[in-house]
Structure formats: C-alpha cells, structure tokens
Image (cartoon, rainbow, N blue to C red; front, side, top):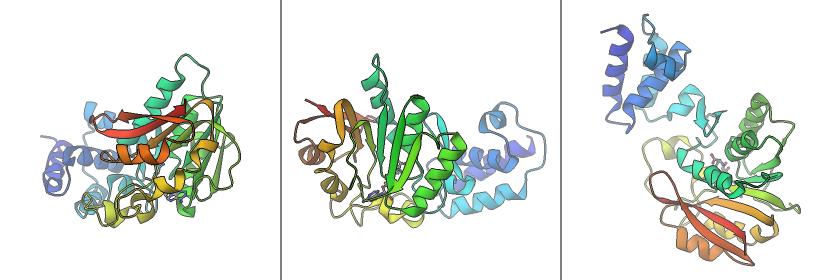
Length: 275
Ligand SMILES: C[S@@+](CC[C@H](N)C(=O)[O-])C[C@H]1O[C@@H](n2cnc3c(N)ncnc32)[C@H](O)[C@@H]1O
C-alpha cells in the first residue's frame, strides 16, 4: 500500500471517534496538505511522502475544529467560499433555499434584485449571483467579521460589482423591494446540544436564537411583507421541527407559505410568495 493511501486510512481510523465523516475529512485534509483537489487525490493519488502538515491538521480535527476552518474553505452549491473563525461554515442543508429559488424562477426571467439577510461569508447571495448573471444584490449581516469574509469572497469570485455588503440588523432601514429574498437566520434554541466542535468553534450569533430558537423569526416577521416584489420569492431556512411555529410567525399580510425539505427529507425551508 502506498504512503498516501496508508495515511488516509490511518487518519480516518483516528478521526472515527470524533467525526461522523472521518474518511471524507481525511481526504479533504490530505488534498489540502498536498495542494491538489480531492478528485485528483482519489483518481490518481500522488506517489510521495505524507507531509507533516497533514498530521498537524488531523490533530486539529481530532480536537473538533471544523474541517472548513482547517482548510479555510467550503464548497456550497456551485461556488467555493473562504471561511474561518468568526463565520458560520455553510451547510449543504441550506442548498434547498437555492434549489427552491431555481424552481420558482424556472421558465421566467430570473430575479433582478436579491437580498440575503444574515449573509455570513456571502453564502446564499454569492451562489445566487453565480446562477443569475444579470442579477445584483445586497448581503446584510450584523457581524463585521462575517462581512469581511463575504467581501473577500465576492471579490475573489468576481461579484464585487454586483453585490453590496452592509452591516445591519436584518432589513432595518431597507426600503427597496426584491425579487428574491434569501435568509438563513440563527434558529437553534439557547443551550441546545450540538455536534462536537460546532458550539466551541462557530460564532454564537450565527447559531442561537433564544429559548425556542424562534427569536430571529420574530424580528424578521414584521419586515418581510415590505421586502418582496409581486412574483417574488422569500426562502427562509428553518430547523426541522419549527415549520408550524415559523409559518405562524412569518406567513402574514398577504404572504402564503409552503414548506420545502432538504436532501435528508427534513423540513428545512419556508417559501413565501404573494397570494
Ligand atoms: C446561520 S448563519 C447563516 C450564514 C449564511 N447565510 C449561510 O447560510 O451560510 C446566520 C447569520 O446571521 C447573522 N445575524 C445574526 N443576527 C443578525 C441580525 N440581527 N441581523 C443581521 N444578521 C444577523 C449572523 O452573524 C450569521 O452570519
């Protein structure tokens, strides 16, 4: 067995007690250590010594640090985002907001103006700008640190002339209406048990939202009806058990709601349109 293959298997074994995705983690860290992409690592693994950097990264992962903080990036939909301490790591569950928007605008001209509330590293806004090259948009976050990642990602992806990134408290002060509103707010109940590494490493303001995790939806509820153009869509991420509570909060003043599921079949988004 070659050195790289042996190290991948050995690291996956070491990571098993602390990670549900031990083999994948091991491959992502090795690809990063070798400065190649994971496809190349799997399809034609190089014949060379294992860099010490790989084992250093495995040690950090064993302590629970997210892989994306260790490698400094994370793929989301069709783009790659740079991330690190102080900003949420984009999750594949959130891709349902993007697929729902694509479905909504199928056969129509895409959204012209997009608003992303709680943009973090620019996740939803930048993925949407990549899909609809004519669109422009605004990303808002309370966290300056998150906005600095978002701005760097917008620049690196070539979207800085189509995106405005701004510090704000949800949509306070925004008077414009949008064709597509994307929002993945914090929705975890204060004090809830989270997977290893999440609460220790990722920022509280991106995760927790009061006793039942509904605090952000309560703040967003009065703002939503004034933000959407007729024919537009608001796609808001929810926790799997929150659909009824969030429908009751958000679907008001002429907005109708539908629930969408993530790839695991769990309720994950509320889709709001004019009725
Ligand atoms: C769950 S994270 C989502 C990040 C990104 N949209 C994603 O899906 O990967 C929630 C984001 O909302 C931001 N946030 C929390 N409270 C906010 C508020 N009152 N106004 C604006 N943004 C807020 C956090 O800083 C964090 O970046």
